[in-house]
Image (cartoon, rainbow, N blue to C red; front, side):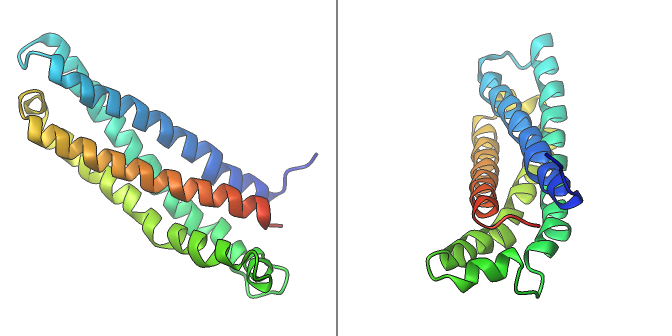
Length: 170
């Protein structure tokens, strides 16, 4: 089995950056949830906020890496103006045209919300820091944005996997 450059970039985009995104999300949401049990002045609250800053920064950075590499590397090959491109293949059959019309539209446009929302969460964590322990509403807003970033990215990842299965980049 050989892995082409295009296969490698698709794996880096989806499996490497996507997996890091999921790990950072899991750690970040767990830390956000656990803050409500802390005393704002406790040393463990400071440790949790420090880990939260690191986790949200990593999640935002990985989200940006994911959408930027996906947009400028595999997607260029996907949409090539040749009859053998994955886009041409999907659009040529009415049974698979929906994969492009909805799935790739999501990946092209909506998926960019994931890094934007993740960056907002990282900013909130840096700006409010330990105050997130006692500011429940702000913590809840951060969790909602964090979850929206995750869901947006997860749907894009699912569409990416399914589209790659139906029409791989060659």
